[in-house]
Length: 280
Image (cartoon, rainbow, N blue to C red):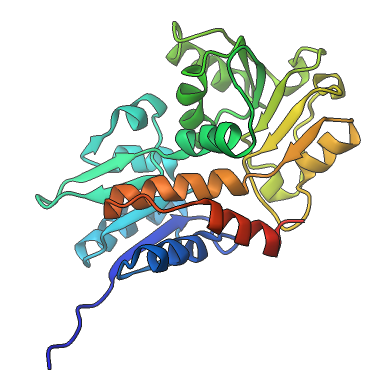
């Protein structure tokens, strides 16, 4: 008898990663699409990321997801960037060509926009959007958000210079503004998106409460079993709705799965199962 080939290996690299639901999600995708693969978590500090990522592929790994704080380092690691990863300057998905070259992609933006529009029914065109943070997570979503032609994307960050850098990089693509957290316009936005790591740290950026009104929808790119500090803050200030990033997580994972396996998995069954079990 011929032994069955070992499953193809995939992984998520970040620091930390123990909270991640990505193995669960990709496991469901694999079973639903009859793919032979395994997916695991690899906690890697920044100083070891490059060596560990390269070794993963040397050892036969097929694809990597990359999360904080390595998304910009991943963009420098790969041999080639897709247009959307090049625009973002950040990579969250890596695959290897048969020639051995590593290609970096970014599925964060399409994951966020798909969740907002297809799952939550939010039409982005013409909205005033406040985007909190200027790191790798934020960089990956600005281009796809601008493509939906919002009236404004105001980027607020603890370090104003980093927000200003993003405004310069995306200059000419749409209406953009930069400020510190304390400098956010004291007027309700239509949509407030938290792209900082504050929720992972159990804190909340110091944003003026006036940025949220009765018609504001708030969205945290982070996810948790109950409220995150950001969604709790939003509800306390009377936001119309406060959503966590479960849908973005599932939708960006589906995009990565398609890049790796050539099959687009159905996301609704996975999202329903995930939120029914862990989202409060």
